[in-house]
Length: 393
Image (cartoon, rainbow, N blue to C red):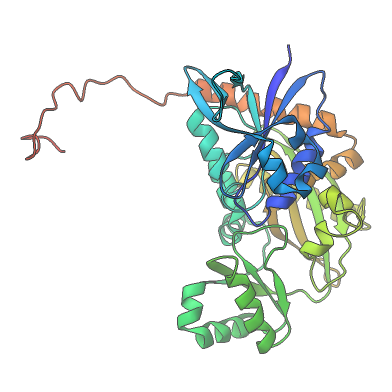
């Protein structure tokens, strides 16, 4: 019997289009002999749609036409099950509900990857692939992520964090604080975005102000850190859960700008391939001992934030000193980092199988926990407009 696998993608995020690419890639890599794949596309206005044509990337070139021929749906709890229910059913053309066995969120960025989708699925008590609410939220907030790693004695660059409001009220004070802490060059980035959106490098005060203006157009909270001049970026993926995890081979993305940009990641070679189209050295051309160090660090980071599923961790390598700093984690990486796992010896369909197994494993473990207790606390409660005498209400 096949497993009904619902793939959620899109959502209200600046990485909406990247999510579409990653999801369609995954859908076409699922073993059709094992799974019935149900695409659940969440439009930018939050409405959810399904339909077989959502499995084809070319269909997304004309969004109005795509939405018009898609079925608007929602998820509904019915007893112990959750079903996809069609919202625009006609009297003589009703479409049957679709039972969901497990959900595969392939979403990127705020309002989804940050724990929002995980919380929604926890509320429905649905098995789902990937990080839980807490680990997703920690992974999305770059400043909190640094704090957690520092507490675990994992090397990270120090940073200055501030809000858009603070900067608008005390811009000179914050600029002086950044310059005093790091001097130039510095990196300015939104705290809770991925895909290099809103990130820029500043070589002087004028560029610093422009970088902060850009970052605050995407997020309320901003992070500043020193820019390593002799920089090499190294990435590594981790697969597993808190009981057991393994690290992939390392890669070195090829940059065409001062930093690895959104354009480098998604608009080079073939944009429809997402992160898989990025120019890279795979495996990274670094000494074996450095690769081993990064892979061990990756597993340590994975466990430090309580991650699950597949993640990608990005590192900053100082090519002069050999120092390695954890930069950020992608709890739902672009293209799910399948290319790193294929280079490690795990094909994409097998990667998906293992992710599904991990989702069901966590769900089984949660079924053994107690979330409610039987109590008669309400049996003696009776109060009117003045409240119950002697009660705490």
